[in-house]
Image (cartoon, rainbow, N blue to C red; front, side, top):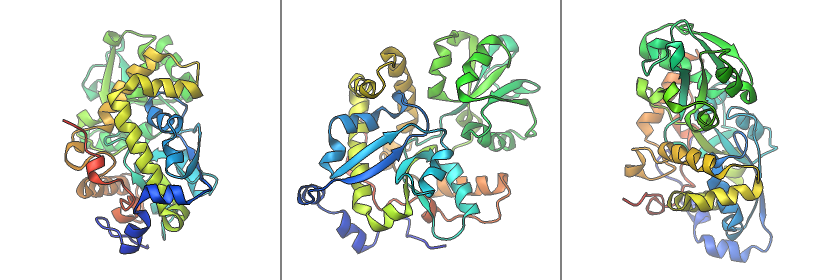
Length: 343
């Protein structure tokens, strides 16, 4: 497997990423980038729409189009196919994808969006589900067939020393998940914690238990901004520009969430502002998790990622262990000073 050094980029790459303003001004034509979301348009991804509406991508010489996705796993194959150049996808699934596609990575993570995966199982208290994962024993839990929270469950099960079939899975689609919980067809369901805001709008939070995977001691990086090999090798300056613009918008979204949601509503007018503001409040906790106080937004700790790679390889019985240098390419990250969150 072709490897990049994890902590440093080559002199050529540094040169290519320098002077973003001059690069933008000297290039009359914008570089097109097709970006796929992990799912539908909500407050979770509002910084991308803020960057787009404020012209931050164009300032970097980019013409960015943003499409809805069909899951954080599907984003990886979309980018690998060449239809999309960049997107938002689950890093554990990226590790699995690279293990099954050895060689030069077709897709790499270039900015860690969720510093901690917002994986959670939301259960009904009236069905006996508490804040203790062991209360899930024998219960019926809904999840989509290909969904990163469901796929990560074996890591939690191993941490808790329980069997994978500790409870019964009920396969449904994303659109039906809230309905089956509200109707009582199931006892709970898997969610991105911030995605569960739609459920919270229909059931009282006091009637629900939120079992975050992190509370079980499973420290996983979540969805990251991904880029194709063609982009990282042939046009690293464009990737770096995209990350600068997005990083700027993430900071602004944290400072003024209402403006970020307003920008998102320009694209999806039916959004409920109050719901999306609450969704972003939860999202922010996972983007700006404790680690970011040390290394800033978008970066990872090498040892933590190595542990995640080991966990994914072991749990899924993969024959190849991808190197962290191939999974996460930090050469195009914005300067650390621009990624630090103000105290």
